[in-house]
Image (tube, rainbow, N blue to C red):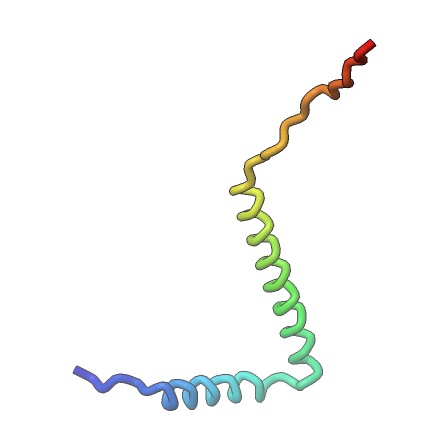
Length: 73
């Protein structure tokens, strides 16, 4: 059975892969890719939260006709 990958080894491997990918893109161009992705991720998360809230929503108030108090006279 192969040895398990430790957390520091995994972090090092992922950091190296990110460095290789990042090396191909200028920092200014990199921001043009990342910021829209972060914005889209936030928009998607908010949509999911709102959708879930509406899916579980049960109205507690019903519309009923306005009842006027009767006069005692």
